[in-house]
Length: 439
Ligand SMILES: NC(=O)c1ccc[n+]([C@@H]2O[C@H](COP(=O)([O-])OP(=O)(O)OC[C@H]3O[C@@H](n4cnc5c(N)ncnc54)[C@H](O)[C@@H]3O)[C@@H](O)[C@H]2O)c1
Image (cartoon, rainbow, N blue to C red; front, side, top):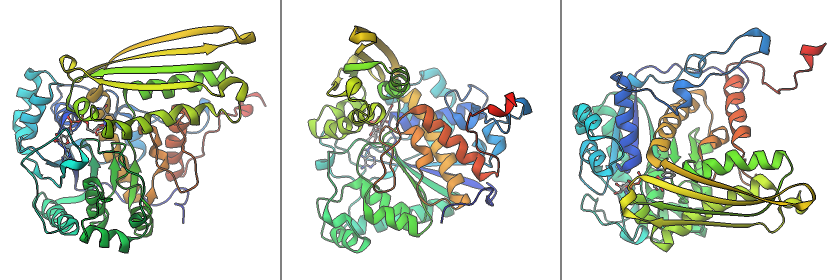
């Protein structure tokens, strides 16, 4: 049953535990950022939950509350962080290693960051070939590892006196995997876990543990993870919110801003060539062709869906789309992404657009983690269950109900998100028709 307009939303009282799988560049930039904002050292730029507003009613009504006043979201001071990683470094050491934030800022946040010590990870090197760490769980099979996670989650909740939890995958990208027959039902999935079947990667074990613990799950990487029938059905039946995949930052963010604009003016596309240099651990992992394949699939689908070549063959049939990521250590987390876009206009005359985006990957990803934690918790308290399509805004490969194509256009995604919030609060949806102003 879909949630009714103006549905009851349980208040955000008590502490919200944010469980992060992976304590690398994104997670530490997120945790340090929240601590910095709490201490008044910086502003939460890039976070819709903290800085965004939502227009209500007519343009002449002047009702534009901040989103965080309009819907009951957890307060930053009520967030508690937990994490798993294959390296034993605390969030303080991991943040220094990631090299995203300035040392001076990290030192100011040393105390809260040192408190976040990663629990032992569920990890197998065959799924992330470029990594190897020691802080790893042992178990008699994959189901046993999942049960260890479930116990740890309960223990974390008790020890930190959390009222609610959410889990977010911000760990490395796993090798490319296709859905397998064992992913169909919970029974076949559990049997495969008992049999240590190779179709069950670590990310799926975390997702299983989250859902079995009744906590919402977001997938920040392009891995299959929770996007399989057994887990999606379980989430929908048990009233648990899930979303994914792959945080939309950097080049794909630019693509989903620009492509809808080109299409809106009926400008054609011959080709879009994207290349990146990236020197952080994520770049190193993506240097492995099997992990890159997972990322490539996620990045490539965006233009096809936005431009709809089957609807506009004269403009978008057979355009060429290439995406490259090159590991280049000197750049660290400060990626540089180049796009060469060959477009054509009136009478077929060609033009070119060049983008050189000197971006900071984790600076763009951290506010997404914050928003997802707060919105997933809202979804859970509201009774929204299964796939949260209104959170597509944050993902490169948005999860959808079976048979539905994903919405990639960032402006439609934002409208969907805000209309969902209006719907939850019993406000009229905004259609932008606007004829009433001229009556
Ligand atoms: N930064 C961005 O803009 C961005 C955008 C989209 C997606 N992502 C994805 O987010 C993820 C995190 O990115 P990052 O830059 O923080 O990478 P990172 O390499 O700095 O951090 C990932 C961490 O995950 C840990 N890890 C790997 N496998 C694990 C497991 N099974 N259990 C627990 N920990 C595990 C690694 O040890 C590492 O510390 C990557 O998958 C990346 O592709 C990042």
